[in-house]
Length: 157
Image (cartoon, rainbow, N blue to C red; front, top):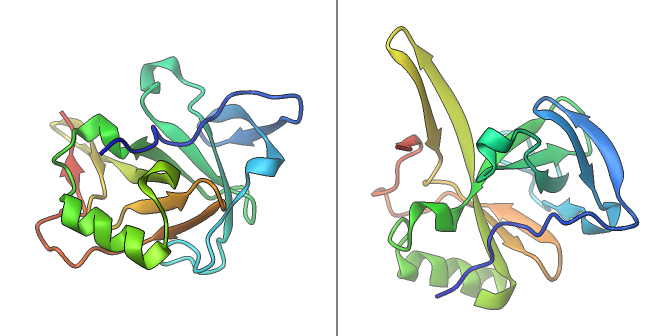
């Protein structure tokens, strides 16, 4: 199965600059993504855009920025950077059926977090609650998967 590689973030004539906590990015307002249920723990955060990460060292990641509150943003990693076996196909198929979406219109991103400790810094992604995006309808849902095999803190590297 070939999923979308995150969200296409190419610049176009209709782009707007936006200062995020990760730096200045550009986005196309026509590509705003609606989260009918908000993101987990933040039901009022229902409008986001996804843009290229401004820091080249983090070029695999993207910025998912709220358009409701400027200080709400997330680093997200497209699922395919973890490899094909990171989520089981049955779990993806179940979500596709619920969302009534085809593989061609599906992008899956994982919210990343940084854990700092005296021994160093580690990056993790939330495999338990991925963000499923219908790139055609521009709707997204962060869904907690029933399969408890997935970790909330799946460490990278």
